[in-house]
Image 1 (cartoon, one colour):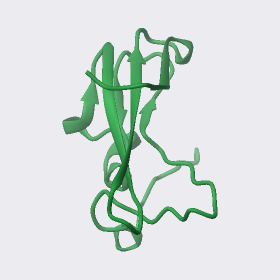
Image 2: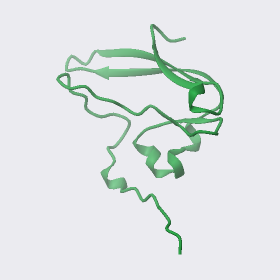
Image 3: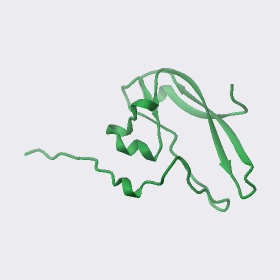
Image 4: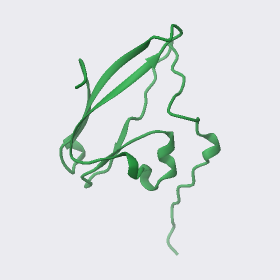
Amino acid sequence: MGETLAQIPDSSLFPLGQRFDVHSYSEEQIGIAVKFEGGKDCWIFSNESYLFASWQNPSWRLSLGQYYLRCEVYYETFKPATQWLLLSNEGTTLDEWSIELVDRGP
């Protein structure tokens, strides 16, 4: 028989909400969106995405187009550092989508 690979996430290990700690003394990478080769849509990504097949939460689907994303980091002073990102989803290949830093949002 053929082997089947199943994704079974342990939701008890997910942090609650859309926030997590980023320390000033270390670099941190975060997942923002997911796209698959051959598909026209992409999806915003968070810890809750693991609960959906292929990390595709239907509520967070983004069709072809450009989208401004706001990323806020809160420091000990509770003043947020805001960074705007531009997500461009222009086609069905991975070469046709990108996320880049921009000076400001819409």
